[in-house]
Image (cartoon, rainbow, N blue to C red):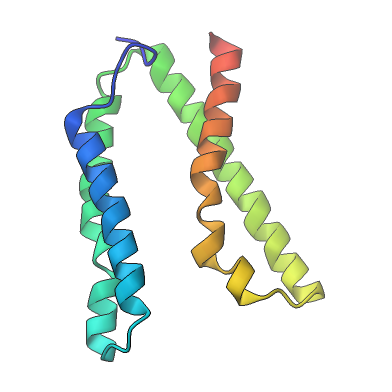
Length: 129
């Protein structure tokens, strides 16, 4: 079964939506004045949902043929390398220039990671398909 015809499984979609919702709820709650222990628990709230999403995605990857697995692997490798490039560049620039944490903290930069994956996916598909 190739990736172009494989639709996301219901569990993949459900866990993706639940993860997004728990992140939004956690972010909202963390902006409130919470006791330290409660704040830690709220901050960790999305973690188990993300783990379930990863398990569902892994189950879906097992259904792919060898070419599609190779494409996915290359997409993840490209995303990883782009992430390293951004983090290294931001780390070095932070030594040279004072960045505003309101704009360039990890809370904001992580949102680039899905974009990097899709860039890698487009590059890998162009190469193999």
